[in-house]
Image (spheres, rainbow, N blue to C red):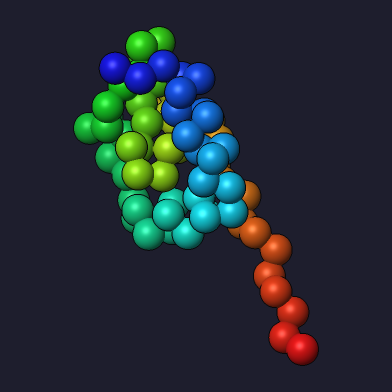
Length: 69
């Protein structure tokens, strides 16, 4: 079982790639996802956390769009 800190660290390590991974994950059934040792649910692919009542704790930020030159 992972800790909340481990999940947050993994999300941080993905950096801007986390947005792409999160977008490819699709809709999550947070109740079916694994839990941390403190009761939050998390996706082991995009490392998003949900509270025990289903509120998302940290949606990844969309990286800035690159300008066409």
